Length: 97
Image (cartoon, rainbow, N blue to C red):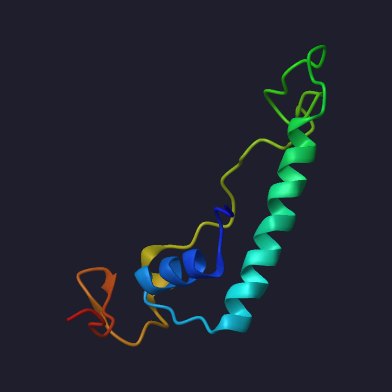
């Protein structure tokens, strides 16, 4: 018995309000099978003597610059090109009902 059938993917798609035809479901099924095979290959890799990676950089990141405040705009300058301002804030049209 195959666990991930075309009907399985059609049901999932329906639950998130998508419609899949048979061709799309078959393509999704094939892609998923390839993904499962790749995951199976990764699971077969022996990592017993491999140290876990906590941070992606092995060398310290001391070369990064310190944050320094410079070229600060006043509130007046920052708002001078806004189409509508009220109490120091930009007024925008309501987009949520």
